[in-house]
Image 1 (cartoon, rainbow, N blue to C red):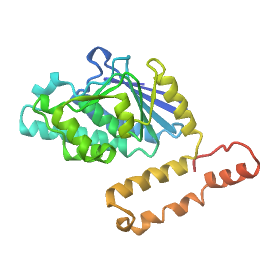
Image 2: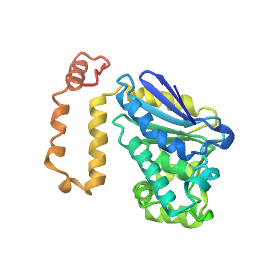
Image 3: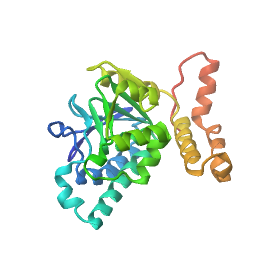
Image 4: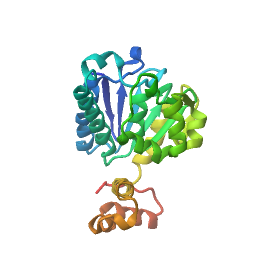
Length: 263
């Protein structure tokens, strides 16, 4: 399935979203940001999809960031800039809100808006060629509180300061040490390694995945267990009344692999 600037391929149980502008280092246009919520709706509504991979076309970049070539028409006034930021926030919220696990496969440059998009994924893996950075200050641009909060949650205040105030990029090894990525693969082997990881995740319980994603989101939102509403805390009860739970118990007793129905 084709969206302008993206390719969406579904090979159940995996969906792969490719940022498909390799000649522009997969820079993301304003129109592309506006398409992401619709892509998220398609992924969420497709019951055959259990894991979503995001990648960049080619080997040079996951995404070098927002496409600066359309800034004259999309960010040249405070009003336009506000609308642009709203579109970016809505795109990232749509990805973060998917109940299905998301994995970013990062090769080459992962900068600016591309970095912000990758931060929305549950898991990030990279090749040893990856470069991460937020060079906003080199263009007089600012990163919103919305995305800085996610950055700090992943790398902490000190590293967020370093990335923002120097505008420098960091390599894959440093990203791994910061917890920004979970694993590093050799150049050229990234997608195969990511697909294998996605299959492994897809074979586990979707019911468990949905609950854990929501619980982790609640903990971030409310700042700890004490602030979480009672009905959200009680959502765990539904997992132990699910068919996935029954299958997990039966398969364990029968000493076989579980085949989770996802409900």
